[in-house]
Image 1 (cartoon, helix red, strand yellow):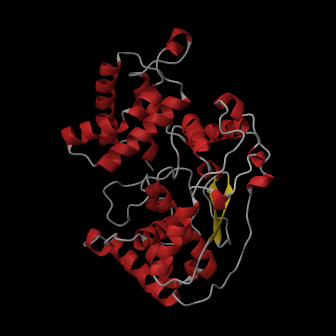
Image 2 (cartoon, one colour):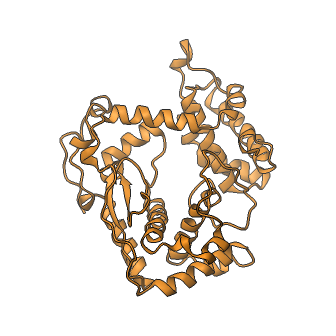
Image 3 (tube, helix red, strand yellow):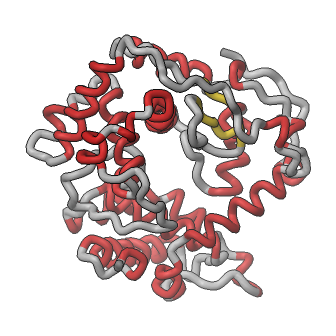
Length: 341
């Protein structure tokens, strides 16, 4: 599907940031996300499920309480906005087809839970835990856990029982996941089998709740892109891992004065992320998923602290690999300050 031409698509970042989000004229049906939503519908049909979530464009990925649909971030509606998101945030949540489908399946689980009130079942609580458990701004994931599936980054299934449900559903729904073989011998297999059991029961059932509510649709978002990203970066910085600041400052330089002429450490780490993960995994045997998680946190903190290269790129890569080895080992064995309970 061709993406419609937009008057702002050829603007520089500086000029584009002055546009209000409500004025971008974006439509989900004419976006690159539309074929992925069609793929999601085919996956639900293959599983024999009657349920179909609705979707709308908003400022982020989310499923409101009680809604039987979910929001998709506006930047995925146009390639130019994807580039802006990457420039502003370094990462694009759902930017690749594979990652987008992972998130779509995850949000579908939340919408389906709202539609059928699955979390109210006694057996659901026995399998996943109490849905009323308070959400925490940070959580203590165990990279060695076999009680949770792996779908999204950061061991997100370990963050809350409701997210555990959504991640488990996402793995169950994905075509060709071979989840019985992949999770054989894991306690997580019982969760997947429970999802299979519940979905068999709900295949032909009409939803108990029907809703077309759309929280924070784009037409109501009058902030400029500049304001949006300023707030988003501030929120990410507040949630970021400040425990990394000391180790990172010993490798990279603060961005004041002449250091501003040097390359950004965040950009450098993002560009070499795959190489760093491969190098450290090969030398230490550590899990690539864990290493990638730590590099992402390093990138986020370097960005929030405006750190710059303090050495040649070759030496900086060696220093970053040594630091990644140290931080990932601390993370794995529970010595990471952010993750101590």
